[in-house]
Image (cartoon, rainbow, N blue to C red; front, top):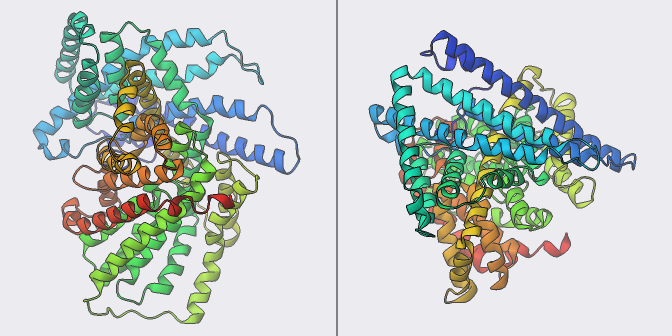
Length: 631
């Protein structure tokens, strides 16, 4: 998501029309660059789906595992991450913090947009030489199973960086030669000044952490620069100007962050979420819930809470969750007198509430960077989400208790039974996914492909809804959103490594470990910290940066790592969907086509309900770990 979590075009073919002010030559170049990255990215998503599912069939059905499967999947995955990141840049769908820029007025907004673009160019230019050095290092390494030169895998980073650099140059030139000349001149001046004061910076020691990781990141994020590029610019500036470390180390850390095979579940579940919406499975589940509760006061609000819980458990993508639910429920809710602000407030609250419902991308990410069992996280995440659902439903009941009943036909037993029969194949999908993981049919990375095949069969044979023309745009959208997430993980991994090398991680760990009050105060500080981080950084980069630092401390003070994960994720979700800075809130507004101002007041009550629920989860460990022994 980008620009307050709105999406760009569905594919690169619309690029010619997205920038009508471009000169014809630049528009053509922009269009070609879009195709050069989006088509391979889409094909790579498809290839990974086929490869992972083939691995499941070969191992479970024929008892002949593909020994080279994981290795090939890892090679293709880095290419998917980089072409996806380039596709996201072309579509304008990188994660950015634009709430402040969009309120600066048209003139200042254009200036800040130029600043963000120039800063992105600076990052891409700075990374080019270290990427080249890194690929030279990897060129002599041969992979064990396929015996392929590892340089072919790492070449993906070169390809992605070059494409993104060219895209940024085209965008800058499209704003006029004068703007481009001023921008490049300012960039050159800033680089010259920084290199001049380099010796001074090296004498400042850890004060540079504030300059680069607070000052540079704060300035670039608030200017609307993509978060991934902001992190990368800060890391490269810090290391090149205040240390003597070789910069190719940073590229290797980025490679390490983006190449974790567990993260391959991210694009797979994103595609699954888009698929269940396209095949009508999401609508079937929602219609069943509406038949049960649609006639009572606030009934469709309960349906919204329940639908988000069910859909979140399937798609793993918050954008897909909201896009699947809102267009189906909101028109009827508006007919029944619900105010638009109330609708978008509740949608945002349910977005935060369902962050721990498996197979959440956030759960997969936190497991991959902290070493916590993803199976345990999937099991532990169900009940905390349900506790917050109850908290929201209590508030819905309280707000609806004084209203007059809205005339709505009560569904008969026959109608409820009919919708249940229709919804059963869709309702069975979470069960199929969980069964496949628990019974060892598929790994946490592979299980999404089982869901994809199941959804394809259900869409073709049961729901009879499958639009072949939508598959390519869905693959491109999957690659773009995945690339936007994965490059954040890459640059955030490099930043976390830099913070560790500087000694900051040790200082933070020591401070948190020696807080008075032990586990209780540690948990309280963590809740406040991650609410703030979630509102500024968004969940995934915050997890990658601070998860490896804080989870060992949580274990040392006696907090179960699964419980701590639930509290951390839900706290970040609260920050992510809380205005005025929470970008998830603006995503909910974009999906529901409701102005952000209308939901500011109604959302306060829902945020308070969620905060109370998080405190309950923090105080009662059983909610998170009570069912772990049954796994």
